[in-house]
Image 1 (cartoon, rainbow, N blue to C red):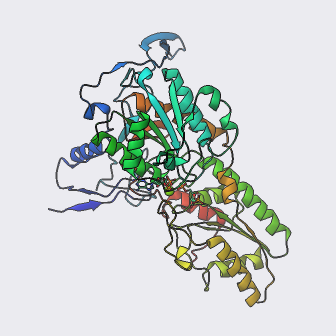
Image 2: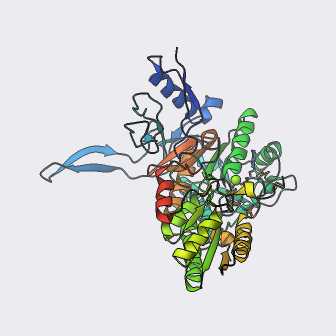
Image 3: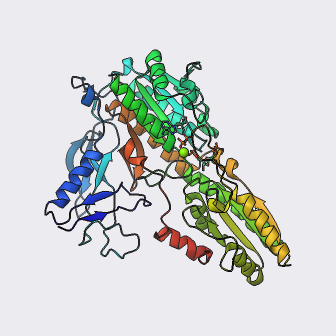
Length: 493
Ligand SMILES: Nc1ncnc2c1ncn2[C@@H]1O[C@H](COP(=O)(O)OP(=O)(O)O)[C@@H](O)[C@H]1O
Ligand SMILES: O=P(O)(O)OC[C@H]1O[C@](O)(COP(=O)(O)O)[C@@H](O)[C@@H]1O
Ligand SMILES: [Mg+2]
């Protein structure tokens, strides 16, 4: 019996953990889908509290009559729609059907290359809810680094909770640290308090890394009487949310833990993008443009721009694509040499000789193998990275001096400016809809879920599925190849 191990590419946006499939089993498709269904089933309050009452939603959506037109353009009356989402409504996870395993980006799991359709749960308000609004005490916490849009999401969660009729809404200051033994005072939240907070970047509640363990956090939730917790954060925060959910249900606390993925790095699996990412790319483009103008205006000018991206080079890749002004884009997923005949510096020399100037965009996590390892970690146990931007700048200066060619090297590090700014319009909309859906998910009785946009539709995902590893740029993807086409850079190794 031939056993085939199919790895659904870990780097892709629609990736899943490694799956072993026995293709000789005639029922493999059914089994695969069942496994997928089981993994993507959303934890529900009734799993632990089978007698939990459901009640009609207080979230009001006006009834309306669906009208459709026939081929002659005449209106005909259709069925009544109530505007709620059915629990079985699904969103398609993958929209391409590859005709061959060699197709660019193909993640073929089927020898015949028929993509097995996979569906995730559609987000939105349910007709029945599992929390009485008057019994809810909801809390919001923002963890990790800053990201444009945090205030927009906080604001929308508060507004939507109030529409459901929730009166007790609080913010926990400075991330999970606000739950520590020396409890910090909660911030009372209402529509009045949050009305204008989206007009500035940052987080009204403050952020932090590190903090207390899960038991301390759940003790604090119990003491405070919180039964809905909205956590805004990245991979680390979601790992924490998952642990908090497990502990709450172990203690038989009827608490709903809902995540909203936050990270400019865009390194969260399964979703089209995370909020703040678009804004980050737009801001990155401004820095790139300045670097280009500096380089272009100098004799033998070289501009180097460092952008964020611990493990994933999405901002660097998209910023390069958006600006069209980058000659070399360096990301963590693609190894490169600085020195040597095919390294970055030789290519820079070629660019100076042929074009007169050059611009390099480097993601903070790129080329870490070229730097001295320190083993240092931050309070959240994230590895502290070496500064590849400064290193590239120094090596570039040294190299051109050594070969006796004049080069005017300018270095720009806009990283914290990018994180602290206010969202653009498209991220503003994304934040608003994510905030609303987070509240709908909690009232629907789900926990340990997070909300995201998937093929332009909003969906609920089980937290463990989105944090199994960071989402990475796939060096074989069409997008990376498009970036290379745009920069014109050769293999730099
Ligand atoms: N594996 C984990 N389990 C529980 N909590 C975690 C875990 N990783 C990180 N955290 C906590 O989540 C918070 C944010 O994590 P961090 O990695 O700094 O940011 P992000 O959520 O943006 O990835 C921190 O307070 C950290 O202590
Ligand atoms: O200086 P800080 O706060 O540790 O933040 C740096 C990190 O923030 C990020 O932009 C985003 O990281 P998080 O998603 O973990 O907040 C990383 O790319 C970067 O390494
Ligand atoms: Mg992180």
